[in-house]
Image (cartoon, rainbow, N blue to C red; front, side, top):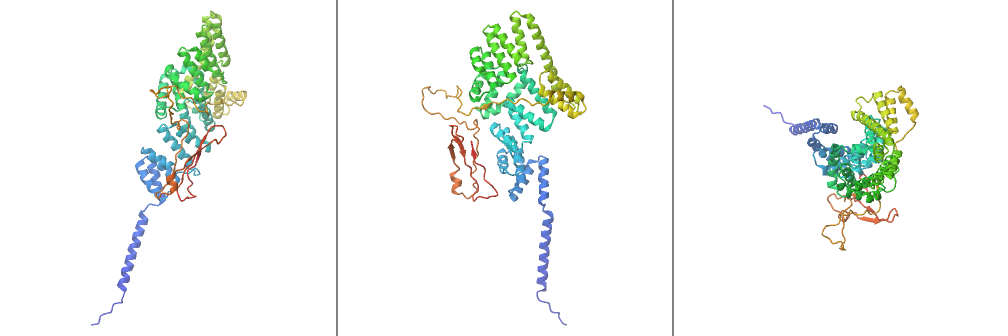
Length: 515
């Protein structure tokens, strides 16, 4: 019996081929099971849409480990972290997005929204204005900034911003708001009695003041609001402070004069009035306050002259007409008073009719006739800019509406008035009278330092760029320079930032800042 000899190495070859096949099969299985980047990203977007923030953050953390330069991932991660209440981490994620990236505007809006949630007025305003400067046509940052301005009672800036939003969007709801603001501005004495609205505004303002109690814009807003709610004693200190730190602010000046008059100090009220304002509505208030001072002095003829000047400045001002009529009655000139009080009643009826229609809203924004009715009421109330805007909207809805077309032709091109909004003075502001620490003698000579960086807008975050191995520049910091950059006699502040070392041209450092 013969034995067939084996071929040497055949079994070894078979084993090697078998192992290679198994390894290849494992690779194929892994390749088939592991999701591609597209599938991973779809899962991330799905979690974000469903607001499953924990799952989204876990997936995004893994994603940015693999793609650390993906700005859209950092944007979504900031949103997810914010949804989880991890605001510090959310801000750090959003700040990773460089200014040249298309996602930067949305990152700034996110940072501004987070700042509003922690009631940081300055940081929120900075973020929204940065986006508006870069993208003038963007609506979202303007709407968010608008809410912030209204909380601060910065009505003129808010109105100008809202007109801009309306021009770009054509949304009639914004025109409803604009008409309401104009109506309430003229008839503040009537609308200040709406206590519910005042309580809401105070509730929105107080958390910002808790964070920044010396912010001049917030103190100004609190003073105006307290006066509107009938608390002149509580408003006085804030209004005095606002008048010291603001540059030509008619609203604050007139409010301070009114406050002093309500507290029984007519002489100080006259001193607070200052020069006559430019805007007709403000001129009417200015003359009314002067008339009330003359009335307090029992100089009825002088008071009547002031109230007449108020009516001439703004003929549709209900308070001016009413006070003139009452003063004429007290002077025994009832025949003259009758027509004046009748006109006051007619103004009140027009105001109520317009307010009622505005509060009813526009059930159908494509109802041209409803828009024309609002336009007529605005014209009767001497609000021609708002009237023309309503006629124009009616014409867009119905291009063949004859009355709207004729009114537009008759009124011509009109632009809303743009009075200069108040600004903080550039020089050092006087300290409020109660700022001194109690218990320190007035003769004390020791220096006292007050941290006013936030209230002055001096906000800067230094990033050393340290990444583990410390370089000497990481440990020494960036530094600060004090120079008179604009030659106005006051020192300006230049703050220097850091960056990761060695320098990566693809990841530019955070910017230096000049204040």
